[in-house]
Length: 260
Image (tube, rainbow, N blue to C red; front, side):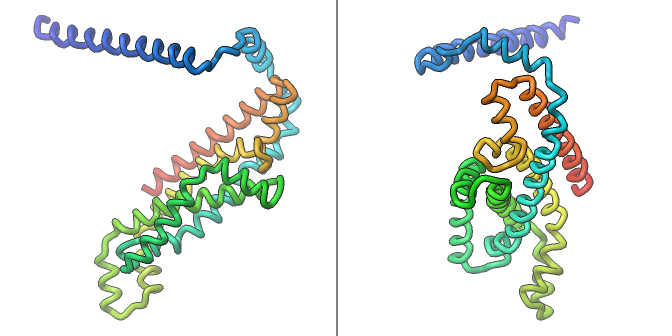
């Protein structure tokens, strides 16, 4: 038993250090809150009142949000599909083993980096201002977001493929389209599907809150119930969103594991 004592002593020391760091973190958070004024208007009465009302969901409200939930899923699917497919040719233009011109690759990557720097909430606000309130604005925002994300992941995957088939087809006289169709795309197809599913997971979560900006979907109902102080209905909306996200994540994870 004696040889185990140093290990136990070291483990206790790490526990003490971890607990001390946690307390230090809490203290720093409280001090920063006092310094910045965050939480000064916090009301425990309202907090507990909100949770009490949310603990008794109004399940009669569930039929009213089934269609918005379906619309949210449709927005995520269509937006991801449009953005994912549109990213394929652009990702090819940015790959160094496909396009040899540094100017072309640099220009494409620069433009796409600008696109990826815009968050989906800002994109939704821009499209609502341009095309108006509705699901179409949400689809456009998710499509642009998906476009940037899939582009980044796909062109990096293309640059890591085996170049043997590419060199062989070029030596045989194949043109660029044939090289891409028969030497490049077969090597990254499973990865592209994995990237598509991963982006879809993110978009399902994002599309649930785009309704705050008028982009349609279940987010609009979440915002409405909060503004009307109908927290019992807010609980139904939140639980429905949770179920949808868990189901989509589970299916997506299983499919991505099958593609790996």
